[in-house]
Image 1 (tube, one colour):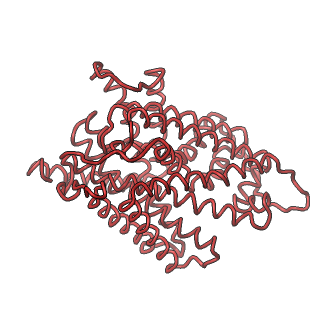
Image 2 (cartoon, helix red, strand yellow):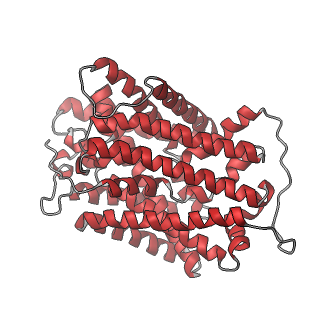
Image 3 (cartoon, one colour):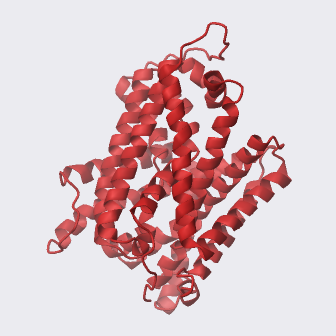
Length: 454
């Protein structure tokens, strides 16, 4: 099936997609688990943030070679199919379309609703949470269907706005002078006997998860102007900005407060200490904007996921999902189908057992696909080496520097994340693998019957 989408996104939008999707709600909550994994040692925690930034940039430098090589719609689907074959391409697309994309989008919509309620002073009960979350999904989908360029501008604006409070917190932390009269909650000192290198390894896992999401910018490659040059610049530049902000933010907080105070008080309590009574409102607004920026970015990606499967005849209803509305220049059927799948995940957040706390299920839907999607990332990193050997005649506009050292480091990083994610969440990993295997079996049955019209 022919890809008929046209170029509409420039460097600024592509860069904002990388930064805006990665800097979501995680950075506001990962300082505590990173400190706990570090044995409450500030030096180890800072080292973990710095190393996490470095290895993420290395991963970006590696994957960017594939972004420059394949500039059609699909991202991971196109990479997987070209490197490993049609069946693996399906697995890549299935995990994105059925597990990762809609689950993350539903969770972001929920957290956008939760923090909007908190910012407005509304009690976060079922009705307001569901109403705000569902409205945000419909609004964001509609904007990116009927005004794709407006969706890109919104992404840029949300990205720039969310950076402002982070920068303000960084400066406030470095300039803060403790006042003896201000009471700050602390927790007992956690003594850790594990070696420093193991502590850094443990802390690195939550750090790397805060960098997740940048890989999916390749999904809209066909719609990026001069994608072969813009994609690598946006990925590497975006990750560099994010790494710098993350490292400075955590260094700033640790220069102003002890690890025990950070863990005991949390970002909301510390913001009130830094900025006064309005501090918690300030940070809550930042999280609302961050959550919406992430939701908008993932919506832009996810609207093309089923379409990318349909382009290569890899899914049920290829003709329907692969149809592009010429007036809107968008695969509307794919976008609306993804909205339906995301809505199911959103409903499950409220329906599944939750002990009165809906965020339990929202967290579940962010944890479930993590290990599986990092398997895909690792295969992508290995694919750079495979293609260099298999297709040496291909002239590339961008090549990963220090080859093959950087791809090997990226592969080892991926193996590290997968192993730790599986160990920490074995039930989640088994569930995702079961769903993936079921999907693959269905694909094989339909593919055997008619490989071109699944």
